[in-house]
Image 1 (tube, helix red, strand yellow):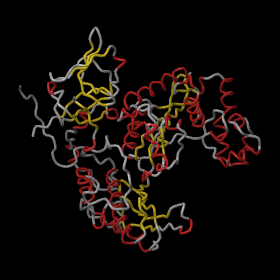
Image 2 (cartoon, rainbow over the protein chains, first blue to last red):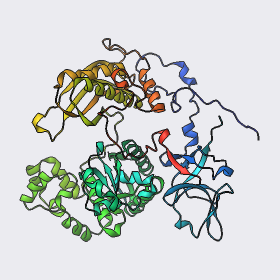
Image 3 (tube, chains in turn brown, orange):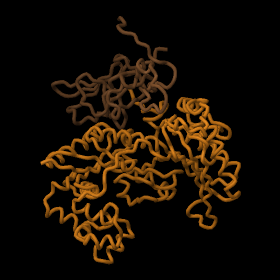
Image 4 (cartoon, rainbow over the protein chains, first blue to last red):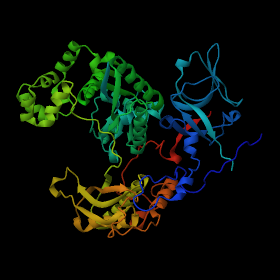
Length: 143
Length: 425
């Protein structure tokens, strides 16, 4: 594994704050420094592609460890996007939000755990399944 | 031919739908959302309506039989509803360049295009909100706001329409039929008092109001009602108001679970509310020039009715919580010791964007930016609303007068600690 690209991310102050250009300067000279204002990387902008339809959820349990999703991790979930074969989805099973990997096979639909201790679930058709959203990123703390 | 039409998009049982979006076990069950202090039902699902429950029904009367009916109650979770409302508007904004927020769960949106395209356009909005937010909406489209509202009613009540109705797309005979059956008081802008006056002149249905003499209606009920008549005929009179850049007032108010009757406790209330209002000022990057602190007794307590208030003009626009907290104490001398106040609030007006005060106002003393407001806000975001406060607002535990919300769902979308839990089992 190699790291391709390292960038500074601000660690102090509110993460969403972006230096703004004062658009209406009421008095005085415009500062020449304005030409050099660059916005800090805004994590929100890069991790959330569809703000109104993005939700975050905390994972409870270890059935997805094989997919790199551990107990206590946070998942970024995109609602309303069409789930594809291989997606990690949030399915509604017995009234509970459950994380599984979706498999669309020739014979039906399978919800797979990523841990041999948990069984897969077979469903004849996708329409019989209630998929709340597709998880597209996992925040996994390292310390 | 291109037409300019307006859509009224509203969420069905908005509060309940927000609760259901994050809790699948509520699907298909009767669900209630309770008022401040868990007093009475303020919103309910269709299933709860079928049980005969109406808005205002007191929870203590329903609670004993709740389990038998599978009835579920939730305390109002205004943070969740507010956030979902914002997302709802964002999605509509992707489909229209003109959007007017009309209330927490309703918005007008403009459409320009061929009439035949209006139905599919509205259907796309409906599906998009259902899929991306899990919120069920109804959409009415018409040439005027009044007709859009009317079409929205039809979309919900006429079974075949499945939530979308384009008024101009219906044939004239059918529109007449709907209007002749719609009671006049169900038209947007017609209150019960106006409906009574109209009825005295034989105007009892939407069709009758549309066909009434506009000048006669103007003499009877004023120019606003005349506009309603013209709007029913398809002539736009009420413009779309897009959101103003700066809202010019901010209110932070709450009902108490236990009435407050002493100056000592009211001082705590004011300190706490002033600081929370200040947090809101900061989150909008605004400053206030005027503060009004107010309190009121219950509307059911006519014997000792009292609604004291004090308005202060601040020396300069400020978001300084020290100054605002001190200003809010101005209410205390105005209140009557021993009177049972049930609600209080802070209203900040004369708002301006932060740092926008005129450069040459020599008399305005620039506030020292001590950075206290943003600091308080950061601590609250990290550790909860009650973790820090100034002066009397800094009480560690929730005070007795704080609102009761015992059945509140997590604030899934606004609090990191309360985010949705998904199971990997």
